[in-house]
Length: 239
View 1: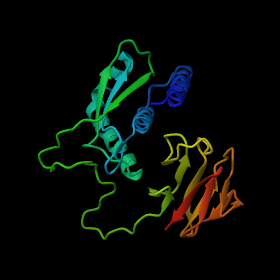
View 2: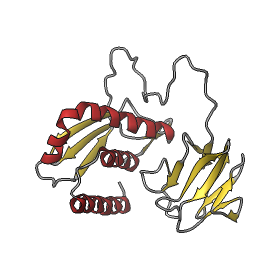
View 3: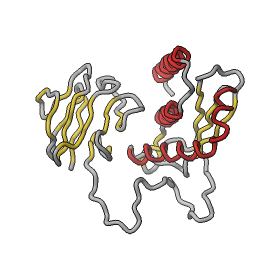
View 4: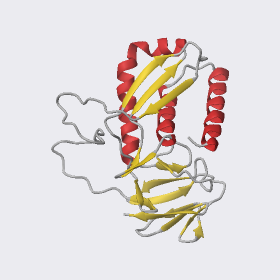
């Protein structure tokens, strides 16, 4: 992880910890999910077939939080594994094996603190599953149902990001559905949603604005081949 990413990660962790303390709320699984995605995004490497991301995640929790999640630890880990796999599939990342999330206790941590250590490791698949490279659970798989049409995508620099739901959020933060790690893109920049059978782009109060084919917009319908500018960071709408 580069120094800038480390600093941003530190600031975000500090803000989240402060919010948890002030609100006196329990640590929520969604916060753990955000940390997992953040760790996955921060530890990318270039493989022979594209971007490779960690598949093994050790999640360190304070003693009170670890005990709080103890009764549902395995089922929660499985849901988080499926979440990480879904994000990896959406962003076209590769994994050496299926995701594995393990909770660990760290008595030195304060309540609400979460530390994720991510790495690459072959994970033995269940007996019913054949061994593959980049084994990821299928998303919304309906056996016996007709094949669904390919989803629209945002394309940039030879990579595509599928728009899988309405609304789909776009921004720099890992909690967005589609993440573009570029300083011109706001933390939560825009969203794409379906209205009356068509896809529409909406600006989400971004700092540098949103444009379609060179025209600054707050909301605009999308057509195949449209060029979308997120504060100057350009992507193409393909449908």
